[in-house]
Length: 267
Image (cartoon, rainbow, N blue to C red; front, side):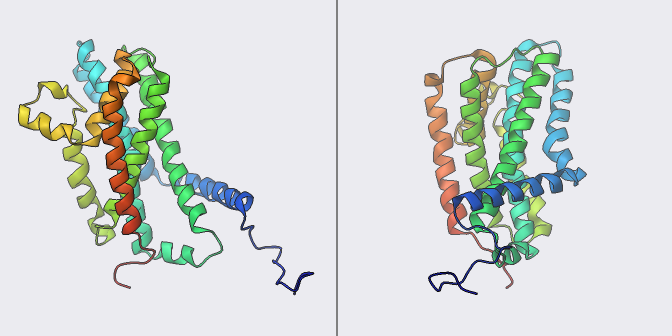
């Protein structure tokens, strides 16, 4: 069946390929990702409840010290950004690749950009919800006021999402199979969380640990979130933190793009 100029006419069921059609497909895939996420209680637990459990636990331990609570709340917020992006994407991309789902999706009419965009929006939504819950919990239960610098909070959250999402996808390329994914992810996630001052003031750590922490993006994300949520120091005082996060994001994005594969390693 051809059109007026002799070109093949697009079937009615075929998706639009232009920008409006691609955006619509991205939205539909995003809605599907959200439904699948909430139907998986394990994923919901580790993305939402686990950071809140840490917040409740350490909040109870340091209930008598507002200074420590002012460290814990933004620290948990930074950990939440990393868990909803780095951990989730490293695990999910590995699973989708090794199970052949990415390969099958590559052969469907769904544009690659729409699918990857939906995954990114899904991670952004989880991060925004988690940050909102941590801010609300800090305000209601731990004596931390509303964020002093809402713009800086949004900016650092967005920078953290971009950085850790890129690093999570990059790490997925180094994971040989899904069975080993938890070991690879936790071998990075847990030490970074401990070294970056999520549960304590990093300035009180030994000098060699502080030096290591200063090279990690989570340290600078926690510093930026702490300034936005607690101290209210102006954004210009934390531009160096944004630079470090941006450098990690650029490196992660380069590795993520270079190592991307639609099919499993054994194919």
